[in-house]
Length: 104
Image (cartoon, rainbow, N blue to C red; front, side, top):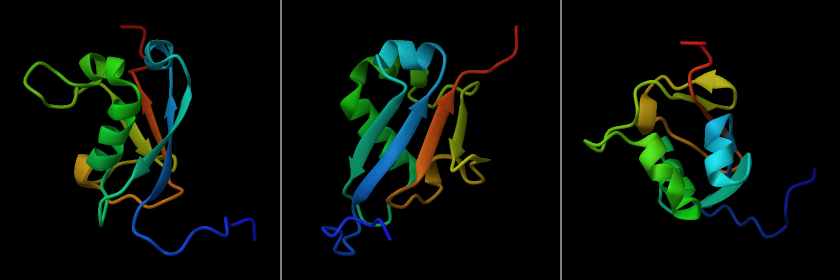
């Protein structure tokens, strides 16, 4: 019910990012849909799609050494990623990215 008729079982698909706090301000939106076209996509692939859509986020998401900022929280369908950026994702997944919520 409610599935798009153009879905043909292709490995690629659309995923949905939710951005919070300053990440949403930088991106200019708090929800961004990305297309991932690789086989067996991972969170890293979806993040690549997000940065393609909003390249201005890259400096906020990645540290200078190219690793993900350690203080960012990344969720898939409301749950913490068990395998980090290598966690598999599928079309229709909702990914969320938000900075720490502590008052630090």
